[in-house]
Image (cartoon, rainbow, N blue to C red):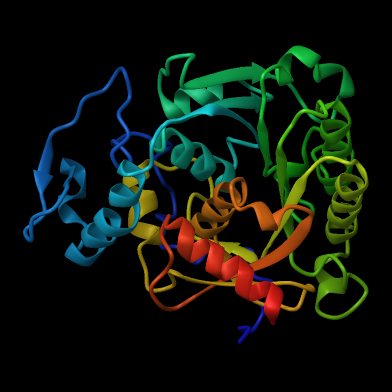
Length: 333
């Protein structure tokens, strides 16, 4: 059931070699509308929901997939006025998608960012009732003022850095500082009233001394992720851990949404979910982001860790019943 692991850090999405650094929401994502931008729309040749004009060049099957799996499902999701979701790591690959999906569902969100100006660049000007931004660095406990967490009901933490030394390690952005100390500081600062904490981790964290995981763990990334997991488990807070396979598809960095959609609309929409750190393979960032949001409301995922992979086939989209079945099946294997 598991696919062969690859340690190649290059994303599989066909991004341009030198992509233009445009805001993630240069076009309207899946029915979401910015306050400051309007867009012309066209209908697909087979009818259905309108799609942004810049998507005209995207092949028809991609447009149909967006209409059926994302736009349609999200438009039927009622506004969640009782939630305030704190997203930590919202400017990263998975984090950008988490924020986009929350906005599309009209779920009130609060971002904790080292550089708050990134929020405007990525998500446009948003009303405070929709998207709030707070400045803070999880690596520094002094940054985590209690006011950041006032009213927060749920937390999705998708912080991370590269497994091997890279430019992203500049400024002490190492696995030890991000995946261990940052997660520990965040969990320690959260109020006990939080209803669920979803932590994005990695497959292989329980096998970091075995091949091929020992190669990935040469600089401690799996060890530190597991330390973060363990701290969360012992914190007493209700949690769900999502252990992703090697992350693929955009956004590998900050791309405009049109580029993102072209790169991720492939055949690997189906999702495998397991337990026991047994899966070996890759996971689309889209699937990981959706799994995080789904876990917030699926009660039996509380207190458990799951692995996630992406494979060829039709995926669950944002259908909660299909995700419930996937999570439940993982527990019976």
